[in-house]
Length: 347
Image (cartoon, rainbow, N blue to C red; front, side, top):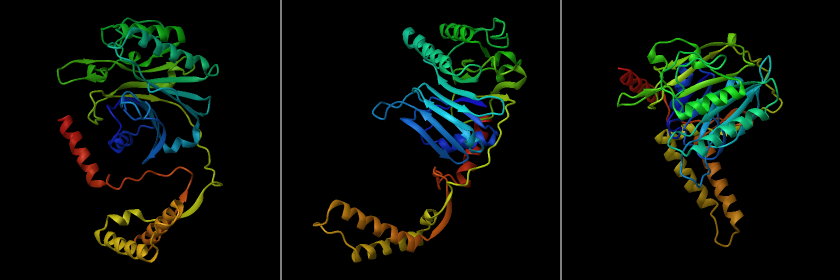
C-alpha cells in the first residue's frame, strides 16, 4: 500500500502505473492528479478510481486510488466525495477495509477552508459502520513535529510543527488514528516525503490507520526514493499484512466477442489497404443529402466497419463489461526510455 503525489496523472498514466507494478504495489493512493470529472478506468494491470473537479473548471487538485486487477472482485463500493477525497471499500478476510486517498489544502489557503476539509473528513469517518478498519493515505501538507503522543505518534519524524500539523494531530486525537510514519526509525532519506531543487525537504505525506487495524499488521512505513515519475514527492510505501480472499471469477457475464484487430492498423501496408477498401465502400454505398441524419450515420458506420473487417481482420476476445484501455504507443522501447530516465535521475 502506498501514497504518492504524482503532480498530474494526465499523459503519464502508464508510466506511473508501470512504476507501481515494478515496485509490486497492490494499492496506491495518488494525489494532485489534475484529472477532471469522476469515474474509473482500467490501465494495464490496474483499475484507477479517480475524483476531480468538473470538466468546466481548470485542472487542479484531484485524487485517485490505483488498485491491482487481482483485487477487482474485492471492491464493495467507491465514493467520489470531492476533488480532494475519494473512498474505496474492499472486502477482506476479517472485516471491510476502507481506504481514503486525500489531498489536504496547503497553508496558503484560508484557515476556514483547511478546517472545513478536516470537518468533511471527520463526517466521512463517522458515516462508516462501527468497528470497520480505515486507512487514510495522502498529502496532508502538514508538518507534525516529533513530540510523542500516546497511541497517536512517536518521535521518529522531523522537528518542524506548523498550523496544518496541529489540525492533523487534533483530527487523529479526536478520531483515534495513529500516524504510522512516526513509529518506524529509518534513515533521514527514508523519512522525508518532499524535496526540491533548492535543498528544502519535509515530511508532509502520511499513512494513518484507526485502532481496528492492529499494529502487528503494519510491518513498515518509509519512502521509496528509487521510484521516480518526475514528482518532487517521494513514494511513501506502507507494508501491511492484510489478507484478501480471492473470489472465483463469475463467468456468467463473460461473453466471447469478435473485435477488429486495431493493432494491425500501425502497419503502413495495412493502413493503405484500409484506405482503398473504405473508398470502395463509400462509392458503393454513398450518403445522400436527401437521407435522414440517422440514415447517413448508419451508412457511414457500415462503410467504416466493413472496410476495417476486410483490411484489418478480426479476433475473438472475452468481454467482462469493462473494456481494457490499450495504448499501443507504450511499447518496450518507451519502457526502456523510462528506465533510462529513472537511472539518470538517481545518478
